[in-house]
Amino acid sequence: MGFPRIRQIESTHIADLIRIAEDTNLNRWTAQHYLDELKNPVSIMLRLELDDNLTLGFIVGRIVAAASHDLAVDAEIYNIGVDPSVQRNGYGQMLLDAFLSASRKSEVGRIWLEVRETNDPAVNLYVKNGFVPVTVRKDFYSDPRENGILMRCDIQ
Image (cartoon, rainbow, N blue to C red; front, side, top):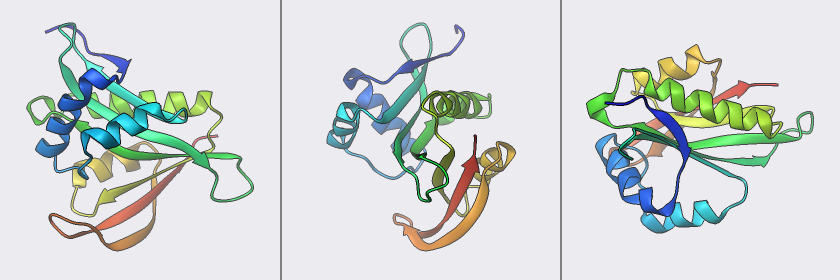
């Protein structure tokens, strides 16, 4: 197994993203959702791959208008997932670091995300990286129905 590296997501990777999303119980995106996001110039779509083009994980988000006027630009993370067979190897951290780096280059001041209330490994990763809970969104997730925690990280 080679050393994993971060690369841009391309349309040929969409089947891998869908598989990882299903295996990790992420919000379901269709192939068309990913294709539409690839066309969006403010999307940040990154994947973690091995030398043999094997996708280990991915992160998808977007630069958005700031929620408040004190910071000009925010970003949102929509999905982050790591193949269950290689979890707990720091790959989620690698993906989050790459997203944070891309956000800083775009002069993002604040990053937002939602996470399932029961997803302790993800919540712990986000807290370790400076995300703070803002509010709980009741029944935000379906399949299974579950509360979501809205979290924010100030990066500038």
